[in-house]
Image (tube, rainbow, N blue to C red; front, side, top):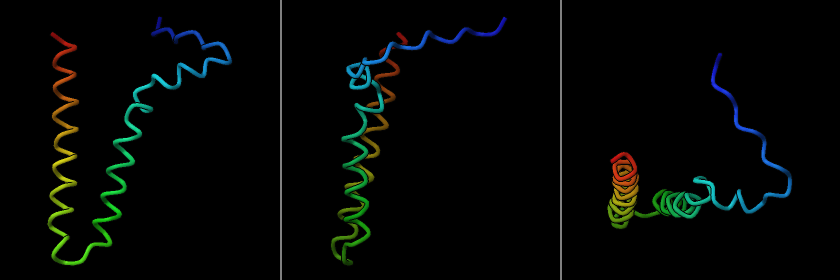
Length: 74
C-alpha cells in the first residue's frame, strides 16, 4: 500500500496556520521583496549597495536554513 495521508484538521484551527513554516517566512519574504523594489528604483551609486544588501540577506537566510536542517538531523 502507498503512504497514508494525514487526517484533515478540524475546522476552526486558525492557530495552526500561525505556526506553519510559510507564516514564519512571510516577514523575510516581505523584506526581500522590498529590497528588490528599492534595487529596481535605485540610481547608479546606490545600486551596488542595495544589490549587496540583498545578496547578503539571501546568503544569510540560506546559511540559516542549512544550519537548522543540520541541527535537526543530528
